Image 1 (spheres, helix red, strand yellow):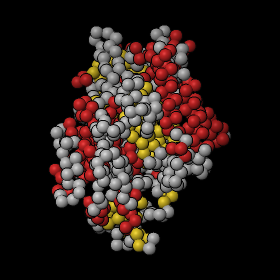
Image 2 (cartoon, rainbow, N blue to C red):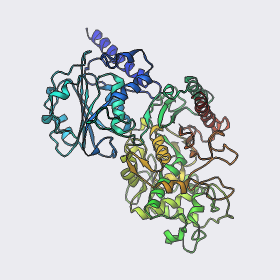
Image 3 (tube, rainbow, N blue to C red):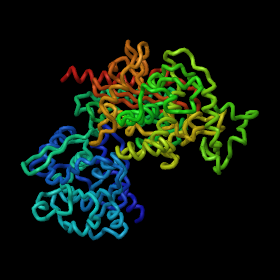
Image 4 (spheres, rainbow, N blue to C red):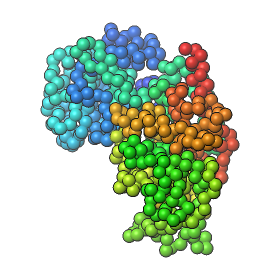
Length: 628
């Protein structure tokens, strides 16, 4: 008997996942946690308005539904939601809400509740609702006729009068005629409880999809810059190109270039591919890579953290590319670095030595110096270099002292991590706190980014983070959850040149922020003029912007040869690449841990895997243009 019940539950779960897969298979992998028995998700359109959709491709069904989506109330222009650092609670009542809640969770962290009827709402769930900054109530029909029975008294649910309240109705419009909605700032009528209706409505709430007013007393919204989840077919891109990307990504794994990877492609503000491949390590019994897993993005930190911060401060008049290091840092006085121009430094034009292996001076007879390191965190030893390795705080001063004693060469392009050791010092002096905490509070969390962070072990379990190198020369352990770069590790994991971890989706949204010249989610994070200033080539004979990498004048370089001269981005030592192209409105993200288990593995570079995959993306876009 128990076995039969188990099989029934397994079949139910499989049906739910399969239904969502139809909608999401071309852009994401969805995992579901089904804690309560729910009605089966709706797979068929049933009303006269949408019945013809059943025979159409998914992207056409989505487009036709979005034309009919109705925003019938929007006080204070609450929708689309902008600042996502607020606490969001979603209560879904009635029919199956999985596609709605799953899609909402793609954009930011949410607290999701499902109950079949209002009577099933327990005290702890009510308390959670009371603490919400934004409360979303979704009512879902549970039958093919889309009728909504047992409509709750909404005011009894909304006991937090300070929250911003949104009501979404998936079902017959009669509910709109029989109820008043004084407690809600915004009300959306989504017609049917179809999974496409749920996904599109969730995207509209966050501004990835606009809502057009159907009647004079309805409201419209504009897209606010967030990326829409879409399919290649919606953009006229042949799925054969996606198949080529899949095969090339898998071939890299087969050839031992990396154990696994994530790839994201967005075109015209629409994500057409967001997929993970392979495992966390070459051990096939290790965890399969999932879309919400984190990678050490290495030098992409230079643009996703340091350059982003300096651009924001530049827009506020607090940071100037034309000043000298000595204008910001008194400690550089009477050193070879005092008169270094900031613009030259951020374009790698200041003659800095490429790299200093700081860790070598902290070892005695091949072992870590016990006066510099401790195997426990304690007073004066708080900089976590790796698991059970904590560096003495004041040794950071010795690291900068080594920099000041290192001569600079003649000016001219020379790529160096040291440039961004200084940006961190400057910005933290200007903002009065850690670069890590400031970015989270003022940029990453308001944008809704869930994984982009320094110090990932503070927020994520280790099994969500892909490991990097088996370090046999410094830390003598598998580096897992700590930054791979040795210098960044010695700074406690928060550095200007490395240290960020992310998944492909969050990093794509940072590139979208750059593409939109600082405007994202209804907020201007830095000025358009600032983006133009930083992204241009700063010096003749040097392709670099201030922080940004750019193509060679002849094409190619870090990016594929088909990328335009307007494009920009950065690569990372761990096997990563983030690139955006304003000309073709393309974002390309490739994340891997090619340094696992050894940083000496350069197959990803020698085989040109990242740029070859990017080449396929441009071929797909260019072929689509020819067919338009």
